[in-house]
Every structure is written in structure tokens, then in C-alpha cells.
Length: 211
Image (cartoon, rainbow, N blue to C red; front, side, top):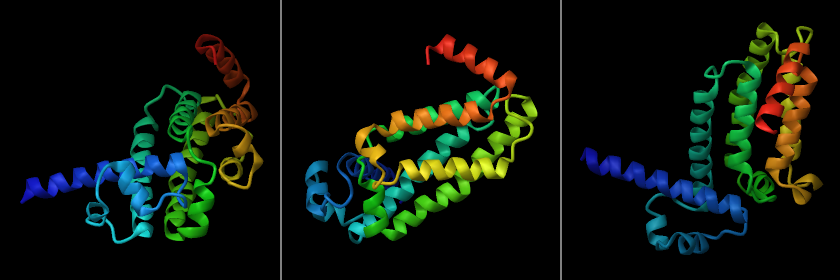
């Protein structure tokens, strides 16, 4: 029985990863269950072995994606030499994952799939908030960030900017790639909170990495 259970878990993982990729590429609303099954090369009957309907598919796919993202972020947090390296690595990971995100994904989710959207909000307001707050506190202790910062305010400001650029009604998303916008936002964020020590480190790092 265990191999059968394990095999099903692996099948679900692969399915939700592929479905998430489709949503990111084409948006959520435009992808019907028939089209999803066709794109994946499976029957709709097979698809319904894993989910009850499209809302269930969207919710479970988003849950899986968020869980994977948090696992990857957890591996980064605390593994870098300093807070600047940490936040830049987190930014690179997020930009890589979101670089081809369709502009309508968040709008579609918010309007047609509120349960899935709540999962994203919880991820931002809980996990992301704790991660950014911890990074700020670490950077201040290390001397790379200004000591006169208000970590809670900066954290909320950062998350507010992130929410803004992911808003489908924001013209930025229709004019530029998410990865480009997020990268510039992170530069703006780090340069605004860096101490003289942090700015010097950034100068050396940008020069070395040709960033």
C-alpha cells in the first residue's frame, strides 16, 4: 500500500507543478479544464482523479507552489554570510520563479478564486513578513543596514511595494517583466536601508558580479 500512496503523492506533485506552469504562462481564467488536460497530454477524467473542479485545482496548485517556495526560501534564510547576500539571493529566486508570470494571474485569482488568493495573502502576510523582518534585524546587527531603521515599518513598506507590482491593474506589469521590476525594487530597497558599510559592500558586490 505504501508504494501506491507514495506514487500518488509524486503524481500529484508533478501534476500541480505542470498546472502552475500553465497558469503562470497563460493566466488562470483562460485555462479551462479541457485545455489543461490537452496541454498536459492527459484525459480530463484523469485530471478529475486528483481534484473536484477547477477551483479545487487552482487552490491545490497554489498551495503546492507556495509550499515549495517556502521550502526554498527556508534553505536560503540563515545560510548566507550576511543579510545583503541573503536578501539578494531571495530576490534572485523569486524573480526566476516569477519571470514569465502572466499579468492577469493575480487578478484572475483574486476575482474568481478567492480561496487560492487567501493562500497567497497568508504567505505574504505571515511567512514573507517574518522573513523580511528577520533579514532587517540581522542586517542591523551586522552593521550592513542603518541602525535607525524601524524594521516593522520597512517590512510593511516592502510588502506593500511587492503587492503593488503584482497588481494586474498596474501598468508596470504590462510594460515590463516581473523579474525586471522586482530586481529594481530590490535595489531601491537595499540602497535605502544600507549603512555606509552596506553601501560599500554593495559597490564591491555589484562590481564583482557585474550586477
